[in-house]
Length: 80
Image 1: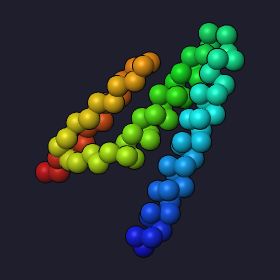
Image 2: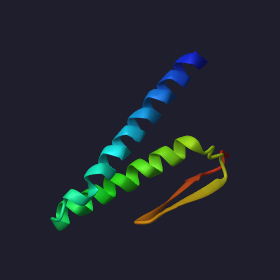
Image 3: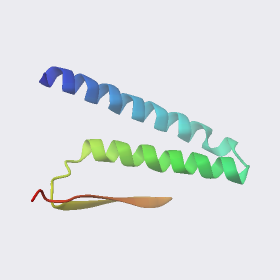
């Protein structure tokens, strides 16, 4: 079972990383404000997803990931 979880983790991480690279490659192509904003949102979402996978977020802890275009805070409450 652990091997399956590791396999899925690796597949998800690779998908996120490849998607982030694609977004960054096309980032400068969009001069339209609406499309440029959409690209920035995708980039932040993918960066946050990758960072959450890379960092252990424990119950009762709060992590803030800071990026050039914004930040994302993740907090997992303690179990009661």
